Image 1 (cartoon, one colour):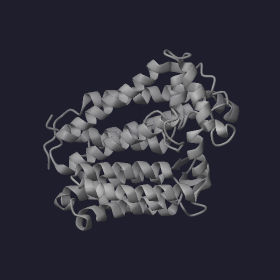
Image 2: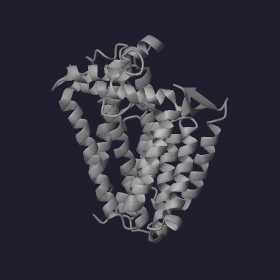
Image 3: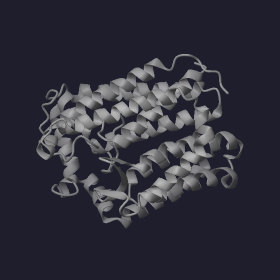
Image 4: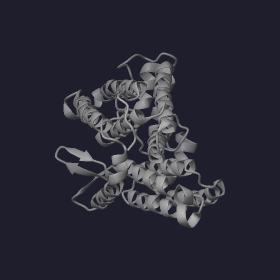
Length: 366
């Protein structure tokens, strides 16, 4: 068992709280008009997000004081539970449908998204597998195929919902972990070609995904349908200029940009706080990733290193996809911006993941 030091990474903790505080402010600012219209309560989404944040902070501090090697001990059990939840969510009457995806299980007045928690479960299990089988990772049969087989089984179950965005983040995260573990680049090239063909197949199999690709290339070709969200997002970002229109002064949140408190919250932030505000958010994420990389490098064992790498890769990939979508650099997909977007499952998962990182930092050699 690694020796524990008394204090966690203070900078990581401060950056997390800064992102969380900014997220709470922006959820209220982005959602107030819509919430007042739909629920007659401008604080409806903000209050729920504060509740999610409270639960997440409690979970973060609790996990921060649970030695990270405990995740190795229970990784298999956690993964099995998440697979069971992925099966349950597909059953009508248990799984709830939103925006065409059966991705939520109702729990009272709230909903849980199992695919979100599968990401962390897969990271923990893969960290355990790689730490115990790193010597085999250069072998397709003994190392690469067993690990990727489990990953793509989970991906396939997530795609049955369907939820391409969450599945893409999970697969991308696991590939980063396997690459860091020492897998051969030649193997990745071959698998990359197969993956690209599979990705094209997924796009062709669903007409709405083809529409998203065409609207990404030229959103103004269908401005009232497939190109609507990205056009409204760009209309928000453009007028923001250098300093923004001012906090609370967004125009696009007045029923132009659909549900702006979720996937497109960065567009409202850029509109109200401008290039300076958007750059500040990206700086905070860069600081978070820097501290996470330091923690991974300083972890006292392979499991801790792979676990930290997986968490950092998950956050980095999710941020890149979300910002890429909002700014028109990537096709539209349903990915939240960590710590800022409205959503209980996503926010709780991210804070639990930070709690794991903070505990690893208590054992770090740096």
